[in-house]
Image (cartoon, rainbow, N blue to C red; front, side, top):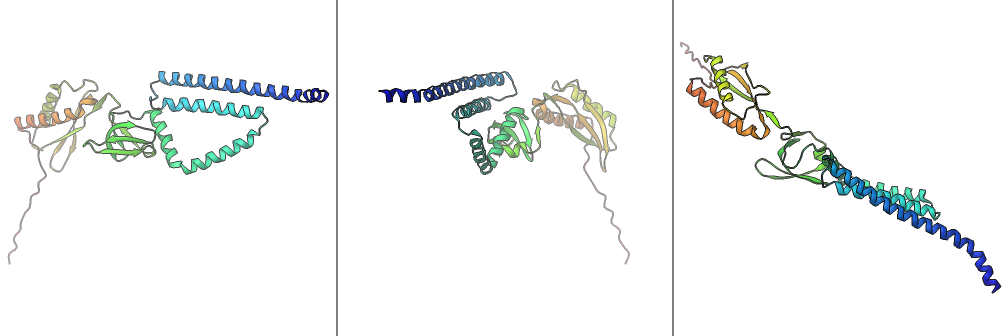
Length: 274
C-alpha cells in the first residue's frame, strides 16, 4: 500500500503537468476551429458584397482561409506537446516545393484563372480578341477558358495562355465608334457627297449625338477621294449599324450620281515602223 501511494505521489506531478498540457491543446484546437469558421464566414461575406469576385472563386478563398487557420492551429497544438515544428515545417515546405515543380503548368493555369476571376478583363458573353483568337466567352474556369468563334467553333484555352497575352474586349464599354471609309471619283462633288452621308446619319436613331460623328476627306488616292465616316453608337448596334449605313449610303450615292470608282489603268500601244 505504501508503494502504491508512493507511485501515485511520483506520477501525480506528471499527470497534472501533461493533463494541463492536454487540456491546453484541446482548448487551442477548439479555438482554432472556431476561428477558422469565423474567418471563412468573414471572407465569404466580404467577397459576396464585392462585385469584383466571381461566385466560382469565393469557395476557394473561403476554404484556403480555413485551411490556413487550421494549419497554424495544428502546429500550435504540436508545439504544446514539445514536437519540433520547425523541422516539420521544413519537411512540408520541401514536399510542397516538389509538388509545385511537378505541377507547375497546372498551378500556373490555376493562378491565371484566379487572376481572371478577380480582375475580370472580360465576362461570360463578351466578344473578345485573345491574342490571335476572336470569339465570345462561354465560361471562365480555374484551369481553362471556354469560348466559341463568331462562326460557332468551340475553343478551349489554358488560362495561363489567356492571362499571358493581349486581351481586347469589344463588349466592355457601353458605346463604340463605327469606322467606315468611302471612295468617290475625283470628278464628283466632295461637299455634296459629305452632305449625303450626313443626311443618312441624321436619319438613323441608333447614332449618338455625343460624341459628334466625324465626316471628313481622309485621303487622295490613285483613283478615288477617300471620305472617312465615324459615327458613335451603343455597343450592341455596331455591326447592324455598319451594314445598314453601307447599304443606305450606296443607295443614296447612286440616286445622286455619286460614283464609287474602281482602280483602272490606261494602256497605250505604240506600233513601230519596220
